[in-house]
Image (cartoon, rainbow, N blue to C red; front, side):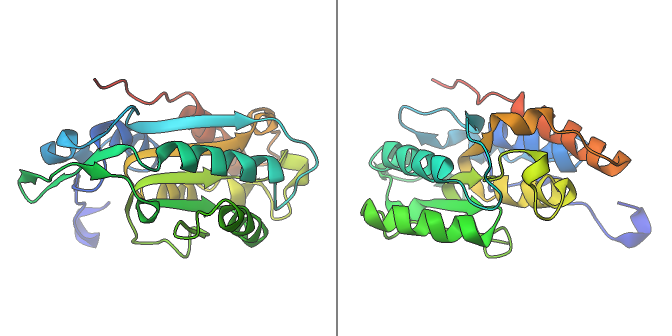
Length: 216
């Protein structure tokens, strides 16, 4: 950011360092760092950071039942694990992770509605699900992102919308500990028709090459 346009706050108190790193590379030229207190957080039996979750599906435009099923699987695995928070200079007493500690971010409203039905059917009625716009400024322990679209040919609003670094950044950075990025395998081989699309695909592929840090 130019000095005459304001100040860049280069320290986040929200995200674990393992999650801050890919977000920083995606949107902040590697300049964003995590406050030391965030490294004291821990979710039992899981790794912090960004975890790409590839799912095979075909012909999906704005909704994917395959990804909705994966959302349920991931959410059920997270709920009940022991969460240790740390903020304001102190470590909080450990507690079981609750439904309210997980949010689901979907790229399209149709996928939001589909996931909502599946969450309710699974008894996960207290997990919030919405688009990027709904969760701007929100934070929770864990975030599950669903891209929904099968291939770039299926994209109803173009690859520029789905792979927008800003929108992906907002989705991922809602998490304090971890983000699972569910996506179609075929998105990896998208064929952009513009320089902007090519740059966005490159940034997205960079995220998919990220592996959650192994912290013991």
